[in-house]
Image 1 (cartoon, rainbow, N blue to C red):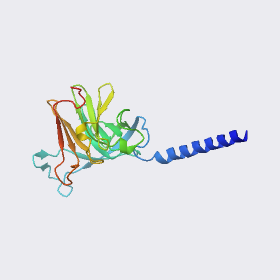
Image 2 (cartoon, rainbow, N blue to C red):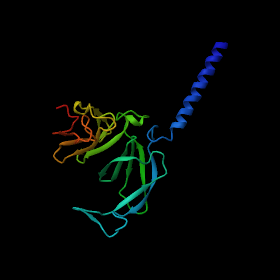
Image 3 (cartoon, one colour):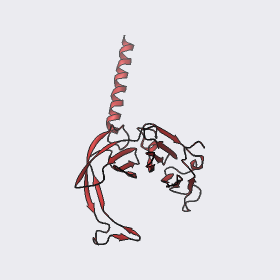
Image 4 (cartoon, rainbow, N blue to C red):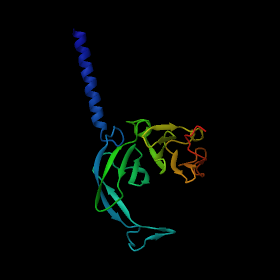
Length: 218
């Protein structure tokens, strides 16, 4: 009976330590599951050049409007990727958080915050969920995201099904300087850019060109 009591005491101590670890980690961005929930995002209009508010052009680009986004949420921020979709914008952070936001209008909008779908990276671990870039196909409503530290590409179809691949050509890309940018061209080709050259620091970064979806078995 004394042995059983000691075991129960150790078990209670283990559970207490585990709960304290969870509580301590819950404030760290991307370390905990993020149940889908609505958040209010404040919109602060900004100028292209604050010191020259009338200047709206840079090169061939015409500046329409810019905003600084503010929200009181532990997992808000660190946005590395953005997709422009018919209903609004999707932001993805370098800790695996995902924010769906209507197009900015007025002084604030309501968005939905959640985490990347299961199967894309290792949840509860920021380094294994370090999303850096995203692209999508508006016709099939499929989207792709790169995980920089894992050198993986995740694909999420319109039904939410996730598949992923770690291309051999990206195997030696340095962590955390791997797949930094991703683009799907209108003809179906894909471009994937590394953040750095794995063999020659300061040299041009490698770029991969796929003639189709990188997850296509063909």
